[in-house]
Length: 431
Image 1: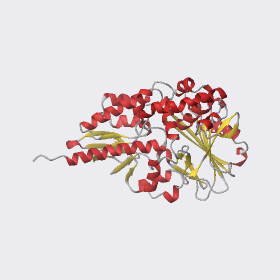
Image 2: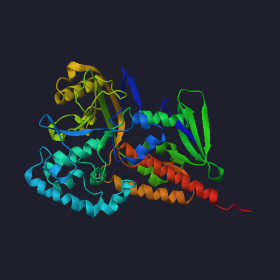
Image 3: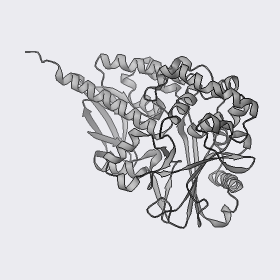
């Protein structure tokens, strides 16, 4: 197995940056205790002692400028979420009934199965069934923090899948001690990774084999890798470009139509702990802050921040990210720092440094219609596999915004690869 990577290191969004004893992430890295695929991968990579057990993260929400504890795991807790009105609490009784009705098509491993529900936005769904205050203070902040999208545009399927996952037994947020970048590095050391190669195009070869033509990023000539199967675990635009010669018109249309939004995150190192325990703070849009969600964690031995210090990782919301798209880094950094200090007063006095990360296409947008397009795409994949094409795709845009979703997409693609190659080997040869 050969892995081709254009960058000089692996990891993508989970790549770590070390600075003054802090491990700086490119994005917020909470995971769930119920993320079986991801946690199994950690254990199999031999990182159980370094990354596990997960540190529990307390959940909170900003309400009228104050950070208040907010679990919202049961109907009673949702009803007591700050800002949810009394008259809308009774309407919450509809949520379990709706989830039972939709359960047959809600599949975290195959989200396209819910395509028939993909005709309302989260905002339309919540206003209709649950009430405006539930939308503004529960459904909207929950799904926006998960996807960094806008509840006015996000498909209700995204929220339904999120809520289904949150109802699983151990679906509470946690934090890997040393950061998920350690996982990417550990796995890369066990594989044949060719860094500095940019994939250009894939072509058919004899006997069903494929040829991947690559160029060296730093110059020095091209290289061709002949393979039995090829998995493109990259962005949809890159997948469409690399696989162009083998794609059907429907696949080209799908890749061209996948929507991504900017990812803007800021990591702030503090000279002192800002909380006693790790805390995930959601920020409803009605608060008028550019921040969507923030993780505040105290330093611990062997953790991502040195003991006696603190680390804040925050992500801007979709509206703020789009508004700031053309702004200079210093302007973005200053605005997010000011917003962060309004939530965490006194942060500026203990500030050690702040690192800004910006990716113009960092987050997939699962907006209304996305799951219907995904269902059509997966139908085409089954068709192409049936006629012997050994080109596969994986990525968060095919599954969901969480790291567990990306792992599930990769596992699904890998299972298809192994099944197809095993079927080829099992065929009787002509005498």
